[in-house]
Amino acid sequence: MYQLYIGNKNYSSWSLRPWVLLRELDIPFAERLLRFGDIAAWDRFRAISPSGKVPCLIDGPLVIWDSLAIAEYLAERHAGIWPHMSVARAWARSAAAEMHSGFQALRGTCSMSCGVRIRLSNPSAALTAELARLSALWTDGIERFGGPFLAGPAFTAVDAFYAPVAFRVQTYGLALEATPAAYVQTLLELGAMRAWYADALRESFRDLPHEVDIGAAGTLIEDLRAPVQAGH
Image (cartoon, rainbow, N blue to C red; front, side, top):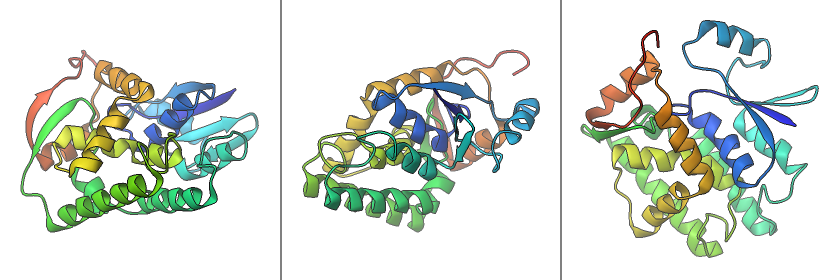
């Protein structure tokens, strides 16, 4: 069975990608969560992953790190990772690669934190431009391939790559047009996304660097997470 190493579910957007892909496609795996800020855990993780980062997939003697590499590895072994039709598959791979390497303002301003609600302070022009690009990209895919997912009727890897954005939209109240807003709701209502979200809310530990980034983005409106426990 695959072993998938991930970070905190509240914060780790990169971990969410392969996790939600495996869960939504009913591919069995064992979850291995290593907490941010836990030095002993990260020392152990560095002995497993060449990058020392999550996510990392272990398949017997093989180690596959980076979310895009994991998706491609799974695609060689399981049907449905990418769309069946070549045109949709090419579009989906392009859109996933754009998310993998781009949207720096969105990442930098709106750090993922599933369990809080933030009112943004003075969104930058770069963030506004990236949200416009995001809306255009999602609308293009849904209109081109018929939805409700980006490359057609089935959830595939391209949707997994944008799943963390759905949580960011929810956390920061990001305004989107009707089609992309409906797509966000489609993602948030998936069984795998609901399971991840529920686990994130139960996390009682906090990672200070992530908390600082989230606090710098704007005003905290609500914190839905379990209270911090002593020693966490």
